[in-house]
Amino acid sequence: FRGFGSMGGAFGGGNPFAQAFNAPVVLQVDVTLEDMFLGKEMNIELDVGGRRTQMVNLDIRPGMLGGQELLVRNSDMERDLIFRLREIRHDTFRRKNADLLIDLELSLREAVLGFERAIKHLDGKEVWIRPKKGDVVNFHDVLVLPNLGMPIDGQPDVRGRLFVRCSIKLPRTRSGWLDEKQERDLDQLLPKDTLLQQAKARARATHQARSGSPTITLQRASLRQFGTMGAPSAEQFFF
Image (cartoon, rainbow, N blue to C red):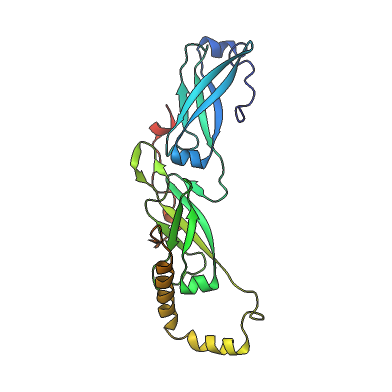
């Protein structure tokens, strides 16, 4: 089982003082963020020496954290086992306690006129998001969705938040993007409020054209809030 390392001496030789006091063996197990989100039963086969193997069942509860430990007591083994969870880094989501964070790159048009995007969540489901109607997204704005973060271990009905950190991809030059007439038109448009009406009309048209899951409106937030929900107690980390 990858992530455990060598177990030489764990169930036979090794430190005689540790064996005398039956000190448990601490092993590391790698767990994906998806498995920590949904929960998972893991069956692990251990080599206990003498060409013997032992199956160990671990119950990864939804919302468990990296660093938490699971104690396995087994009369067939000379010593108890402690499995310490290590969370595998995710390509899309960053986690802090019960909160999740993703980065979202927007075009200039999306930042000014609004957007609707689908995010594939850790359970494989798509979550449609959009900014508040009429809002213009600025560089490094942070938006938040309540109840779309991680479950909280021991509180199955409580969820953390999903933070969305926005960046805007601007064109490097106006050449090839705007001709002279379009530049003049844009110069006339920018001081006026017509962009807001266009954003509202576009959001309505997009919502009417797409069926399925409802779109959730993002609220403004600060990264100082990220990770403040679901902070574990000391009891959660140790069996």
